[in-house]
Image 1 (tube, rainbow, N blue to C red):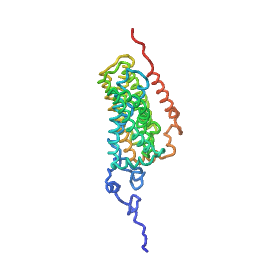
Image 2 (cartoon, helix red, strand yellow):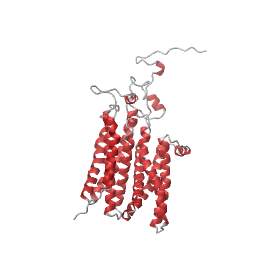
Image 3 (cartoon, rainbow, N blue to C red):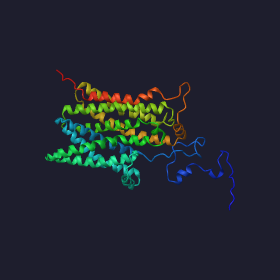
Image 4 (tube, rainbow, N blue to C red):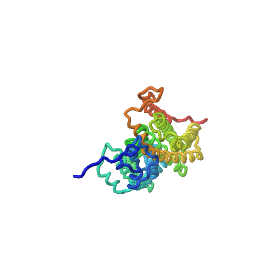
Length: 387
């Protein structure tokens, strides 16, 4: 038998056998070094308590591609069943945009998984309790039904009336899957242990869904500039974009309030991610297109130049939002104090502030619901024609 000896202790209080630079563990596995050097006082041997994700810019592009296909599929299905012949070109554009997205989104996601076999392995078993499994199945179903819906639309374009029935039948499951792929990225991030993402629950999912709808409507608005679309069709699309931007702005402000107000995400406060979120996402990405859309609705006349600029700003702002959320989340995972503060059963009260949940936190969901209801009323409000 060998004898066990107590290793000598270092000045930092760690045993000599474990006295190693924390970067050794990261370099050994070929991983990037933490952006925030963990503090030995609040972590285990100076290592981050949570392993950050590998989500980078490809994942942000994947989320945007899903939005640019899923939302147009939802809008196209709603316009198709409205029975208005003036919106046929918009229905056609939405279905073809969804078809393109059904190819680009899985390609970007599989590329980011690093191991293509993971995609097919996840399809073998469906777990209703796993947001990643739900998202993977939803994206696969979206591709299948979008292809069938686009095939029906192609038959209609070639003069075969049978394509209308096929397009109507397959558009319903395609729209359901399209709405799901706009929603699931936020839900998937909320279910992780990353402090910034988990601390955003349950508001990150509505933010991502509203961002997807606004970006998808912006893509259809750009396509409408090159199509023969009636003023009524442009007005409906403009109202839908305005509704999505209003919900997106409200959700973004509520999420930012959680990141700032709870004092849990220390790494976000004062970082470049906070500046990009406020000056890039909320400013030019949401407020500018919202003002332009509102001006178009109130004036009752189309503004082609303004709508084009607003659509481009909406898409760019959506991509920036996805990228900032992913980068800031990975940054918070490398900050030991963020995780330990988030892991507390109840955050420590600030000086001069009573403990317990804030009353405004309870009405966030109610506020979003009321805003969505007001937006729906605006969507169906018909302006009186000018004399």
